[in-house]
Structures are given as C-alpha cells and as structure tokens.
Image 1 (cartoon, rainbow, N blue to C red):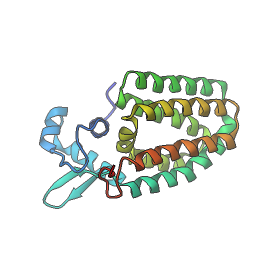
Image 2: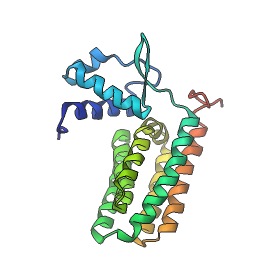
Image 3: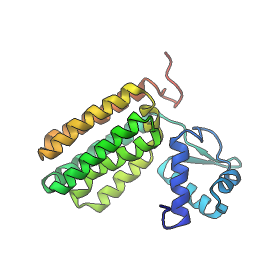
Image 4: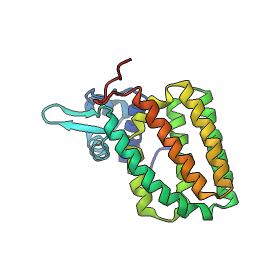
Length: 220
C-alpha cells in the first residue's frame, strides 16, 4: 500500500534504493532520473533528501549535489553504542508489559526474517528485522526514546545490507533471534539486554573486517 503522502513514498523508495545498493555509497544521486523513475516532481524528492541528510544517510556537496554517504566504521561504532544505551532502557521498561498477543506477533516477525533470509531477499530481511526489533521496544511506552532509536536505525540501514550479504551472518542473525525471542517470552529483561548487546557486537565485529576505517573495504 502506498504511504499517505508523496514525500513519505519517495523517502521509502530512496531508502530501498540505498539498501539494495542501487545507489552506491559515494555515488551522486541523479535527482532528475530518480524523480522520473518514481513518477514524482523534484519537490518531494528534495524534501526526502533533506530528511536522509539529517539522518546521515546522504551528504550534500556544494556544486555537486547529494550523494549517498560513505560507510565509516567510526560512525557505525558510535551509533551502535548509542543504541546499546537507549535500547537497554527501552527493553527494561517494555519487558514487564509483553502480552501474549505481543509475544505471538514477535514470533511471527522472527519467522518473517527467516523467510526473507531463505529467499535471499536482502531488502525484505532488513525490513522484517527492523519490525522484529521494534516489537521488543515499543511496549516501553517512551515515544521520545523510540524516536531517537528509529533515527539511529535509519542511519545504519546501508551497514545492515553489507552485513546480511554474507550467508554466515544471516544464519547467525536467525540463531540469535531465536534466543532473543525466548528471553522475551520468559520476560527476563536482563538476559534480553545481554543477548541484544551480543547481537549488536557480532554485527560490528563482522563489519569491522569488511569496512575499513575510512569507509572503504578492509585490507585482506
């Protein structure tokens, strides 16, 4: 279903293009071509690009226009450290409020991640993974905290695309999600926080071998 506004539609499509690697990091964003591809004017496209710039997903270069931000290890580590702090608070607040219905939804979302992984659907896996994780956080009842966490997630979708590109990483994510879902079902907040910390740490460690400190590939 098409989102309710043209700007939201354009923003969603730009995110998809970046995650799918159709606009590579460092490459200029050809606004005329994308506007034509999406069937929209450049006005909502410019607004969507401003949103992505605020999130750190694109950069604006004077006289050259917008480009997809280069992947940088230091940025990733900072974002994941902030997520560690904020998501721990959200999980501790949310855990006592998990209902039977919410846990059933969480399990369904976990299976959605598995199905996308089995089909090598990278974009679908990233979207399903996000829904799975936010199902853990949303019962916390802290909308401002959740907005901050969403912004952090938005800024690192390109990294997840790199991480999920390896089959071993996809398999590890699936195993870790099983343990995370069981801890949520047990309503064991501290175990859940520990598992989520480990989950993020594995992603950063794997990406450290892929992304160099300046955003390029690491040396073999």
